[in-house]
Length: 252
Ligand SMILES: NC(=O)c1ccc[n+]([C@@H]2O[C@H](COP(=O)([O-])OP(=O)(O)OC[C@H]3O[C@@H](n4cnc5c(N)ncnc54)[C@H](OP(=O)(O)O)[C@@H]3O)[C@@H](O)[C@H]2O)c1
View 1 (cartoon, rainbow, N blue to C red):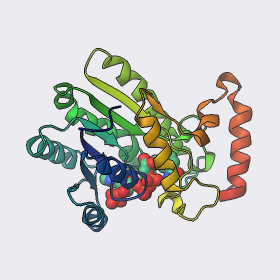
View 2 (view 1 turned 90 degrees about the vertical axis):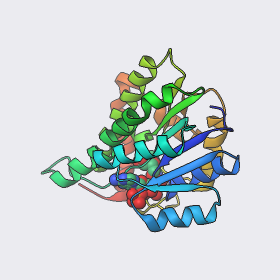
View 3 (view 1 turned 180 degrees about the horizontal axis):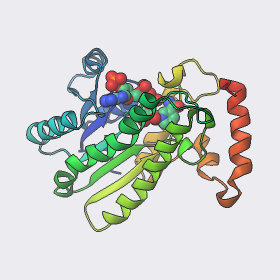
View 4 (view 1 turned 45 degrees about the horizontal axis):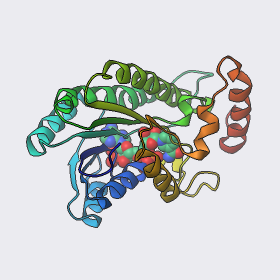
């Protein structure tokens, strides 16, 4: 995508990957508006990046999405890029009784939220040149991590949705992108200090390079082996990955 001259809305921009992308795009002179639930995090990011703006959003709440979309279109009629990045990840228990609150909140936040957010802005985006809808999925969309089976399923579903939406928007001004990160050092699953995870600044630098090309999928080097999931032969890959994940995270 074109990395300059945009007005960009990023959900989950108050921390981690969203904050990293927001700051990198802000530095390039784009107008950036970030969103999330925690006002303190949003305030810290906009204080550190003069000119950036923030808006409170609960992506799990359809009324909040509608309110934010209306405000965005009114305050920033030039908005042409939406980055659906907000997400949550918790360990679950696919081999046993599922915590219904975890199930519902994960699917509502990671899958229904981005679908609703895009839906609320899509007609506006179609009226813009060089419009982009991007989704942060995960390598776990391609190789599920069994100790976070519900999370992995939401990311696989996002990948599927992206393919449908990209096709259906093929004759419009809107490009649909997927950012599929590997494990990155953020608050997600308390991974800030995880040695095996990719440092956030390195991930953002590599991602920005690829984002600046014509690629539909933003897959950094460390994520490529997962994206290259072995198709019908995936079981060996998936089981081997999950043996390693169990050793790291524990579980049954
Ligand atoms: N880190 C990784 O290893 C990794 C790998 C692959 C994919 N990802 C994906 O990358 C994205 C960003 O995650 P991250 O790693 O940067 O972790 P993070 O720092 O925890 O970021 C998640 C962001 O989502 C926001 N969020 C969560 N629930 C929300 C809600 N209901 N409404 C609005 N915003 C909400 C959070 O803000 P509030 O809590 O303030 O609302 C937070 O800023 C997620 O989609 C995640 O699944 C991460």
